[in-house]
Length: 74
Image (cartoon, rainbow, N blue to C red):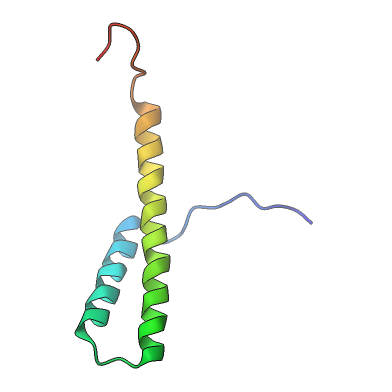
């Protein structure tokens, strides 16, 4: 059995954020069955994790690109 390298999600941060906003709007509007609400909630949780992934990656890239702060800097 081989272990695959983790791959980047195919959904962009912007796409995930927009879909998450739509999920929130639909949940707030109400009128859904319990099952529909739970399904949307679960999708929202997955989208929130995906957005966090992208934000973490951006933070890592910024940290790697920033000059190291040493004595006499900053």
